Length: 169
Picture 1 (cartoon, one colour):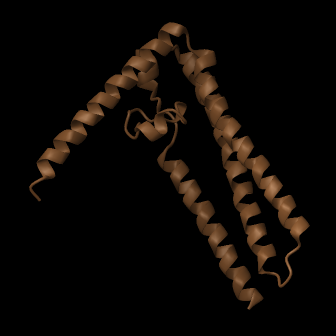
Picture 2: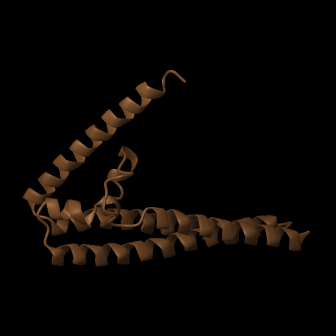
Picture 3: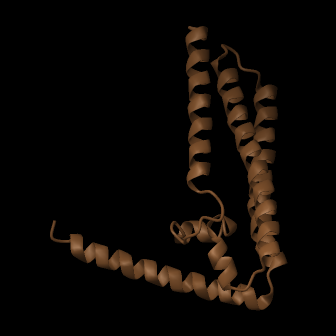
């Protein structure tokens, strides 16, 4: 029974890691379009959806774009490691809970580690947003906000057109 449980937990861990990696690949940084820039994403992950062409439109130099890309990739690597550690800690809790008498101190310790990892993940998302604010001028930030507003309005208009066309179905 314990072997079966460990096998199932191992499979769950592998699936969760592969899903998180595939999600990461789908949302790669600096895609050359604005797609996916919905309300739920644009605040938390500004850099992920900023295309090089958009950065060029607001007057960011090629050297600065390269610098931003490198810093974003470093942050993204850290986030991947943190999320993997979080998954591992969750499996550790599940493994401990399988025991006839789980050790409360061990569970508490793992829970505290999970809290720290979640805090680190939260800070990395803040660090990502600061990356833009630190490296762009006020004028560039203003242009970026205006372009984002225009994009959201265009997306909203497109969604309305699609909704109207599909109402008859």
